[in-house]
Image (cartoon, rainbow, N blue to C red; front, side, top):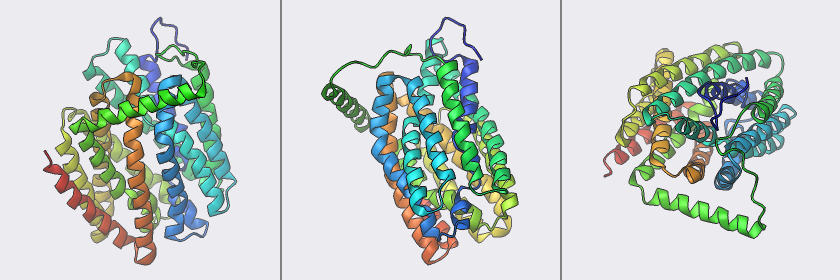
Length: 395
């Protein structure tokens, strides 16, 4: 697809294409089999969570530096680096046989994921703004991009589940090839709204000072914005509460391998429903996020206690989680007004949430290993309810 118009950045059509590719090619082939891969490799529930802990630690360490670099080098270069590095990480995973090698792969993936945080969203938003799209139209376009992304995610999940039936490592190898292909597409088929300005030729000390200034400005924006603080706390709570389900659903629900893909499609369908509902909630405030988190916590507990109806409560859980993600993303974009440090600010927020996610992984893995998966899910669901209620009434 060739862009021939005179405007900088991504066209509306290319925004949709990038939305599809970012979901299809950036590791989605391993989504349905990820948690089961570790258990099938002979790890305990706690050991199964350990490689992902490395991912969170290094994502936390790299979120701010990579966000700063993304603001300096342009969003196109940042997206290219994310896809290329992701390809390397998945290739290492394809050859992994131990917790140690899986941890190395997760560290590489963390670098790619850190570059990817918020960058495509900002690239799309600023490109559309230059093309005269109003805020309302940009919000709707972002949701359309995410819906297209869900379609890409769905295709990749089915592919990954099919490949897993042949070899537990094959989805990672194919995922590496897809990510590498996306990196080439970005280089040759897209345009940066910043017109791909060359890197500034300055001493490293000056680059470091620029990075420090970016970080300070982003931190100042967050600290002086009550709404950004509340959005950050809500997102951190969601990151914490969702860890047991993220890593344990395949095993906790005792789903047979050949049903993993179909079950994950149920997740994706619920997420698509959530995005459609979110379209009608674009003016929601932070209290809406807390109400959604409470619903997520209740549904987690219900999946365990009313296991006969787990499919019904899974649909509710995934729908609510997607409404939350969509509204949170929109609120962040709309409340960070300086495009030059928008990616940095999002990275600062994400880095804090990575720490919370890491804690969630360790604690949920410990509870599942020491007691049971049911205890882990009920404990984290209850925590989501209690903390969301406390946040709801903060002024």
